[in-house]
Length: 285
Ligand SMILES: Cc1cc2nc3c(=O)[nH]c(=O)nc-3n(C[C@H](O)[C@H](O)[C@H](O)COP(=O)(O)OP(=O)(O)OC[C@H]3O[C@@H](n4cnc5c(N)ncnc54)[C@H](O)[C@@H]3O)c2cc1C
Image 1 (cartoon, rainbow, N blue to C red):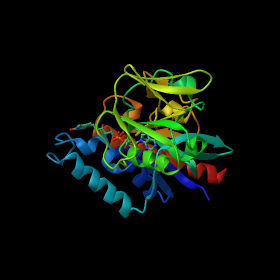
Image 2 (cartoon, rainbow, N blue to C red; image 1 turned 90 degrees about the horizontal axis):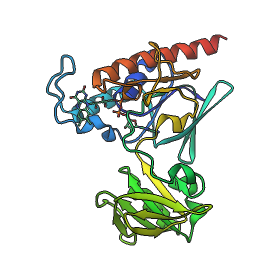
Image 3 (spheres, rainbow, N blue to C red; image 1 turned 45 degrees about the horizontal axis):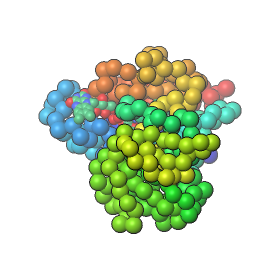
Image 4 (tube, rainbow, N blue to C red; image 1 turned 120 degrees about the vertical axis):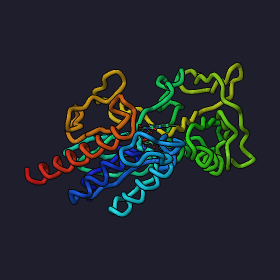
């Protein structure tokens, strides 16, 4: 059975959408990274959140999470890599897993950082965003993991465990990486190849690789839904937080400025309620 609503991203906008959809009696799953990965979690002090000045971002995120759990929101840990819509159902690929929902709220925040040179050219031909989906194709072969998400070392360990020859590249020394995996400090990165990927260039060094796994915390929304309309890089929405695609809503930083907590929470409320109304209309049609 599909959920009524799937929310992509477990930050303030996503959790606000989730609890407000639950308040309308809808089944809701939030697909996201650990809530401690929301940028808000790093805020030392938030002074412009009405009625609650002086809280830390961590305190607020923990309170949001407790609230969502108390409202019986379901949680699914992982990154959504792709969303497909077919006959009124949305199919969300989460690594090698799948969730289904009648409506989706995108609450993905802002994706910082550009695509790497060669990334788009070699996607599916030696560039992957998912170790568990594609790792088996590269058993016994050299691969590079570019770790940009906190769970990336675990994914690299998984690849090494199934027999890939892994090199790990990241800006900071990773925690929890098994000693058998060499680590190289990140620099200017470029994916190079011929028909398929042959190496990752790090500054002037070429690391041979048949696959480069790019493990980020967030995905640009148009990677999830290529037909999504954007304006200045942000998802275009109307006052109901509807996107140009039926059944797809968006809220929070991903819809544009100001990139602030109160706006994220408010838009989450509107998106959650509007998505719930959409699900009601589907059931009555
Ligand atoms: C250091 C700092 C201090 C701040 N201080 C303040 C302040 O004082 N006042 C204020 O109003 N605002 C402040 N902000 C801004 C505030 O944190 C943001 O506006 C707010 O977090 C936006 O919420 P959001 O839910 O839209 O996005 P986010 O909080 O960014 O949450 C989005 C979540 O979605 C996840 N995600 C993205 N793509 C996917 C995918 N494909 N699959 C699964 N999950 C995905 C991301 O990893 C992230 O966890 C601060 C931000 C920072 C970084």
